Length: 133
Image (tube, rainbow, N blue to C red; front, side):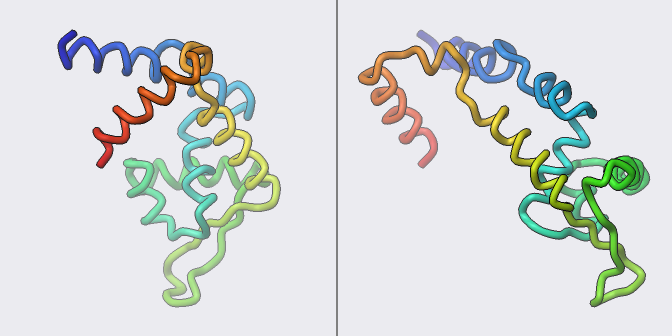
């Protein structure tokens, strides 16, 4: 089996077999990009410019995303105490709940993977461990 074939199978398994992004969007009632912003903010408050960098979006689009999340009561914006010209975004309690829900969906293994026998999962874990290190 070639590396290309193995990679194609892994990619399909993770990205295509179970559209997790759509499941997240449906569960939260918002686009995946907004859910991605919530998950990014789960690590703690962030300047708008830093959030734009994490989301790989421009600042105006990040503002649109944060405006929507703020209207939904999922984030709050405040002035950065270190530089009052900058805005800091942080999750509200509702935002933390939504971010956790998105993370749970995204971190649930695909059915095909979960159905493997323990010895095959152990072997796959060892192989992936070699690739990751």
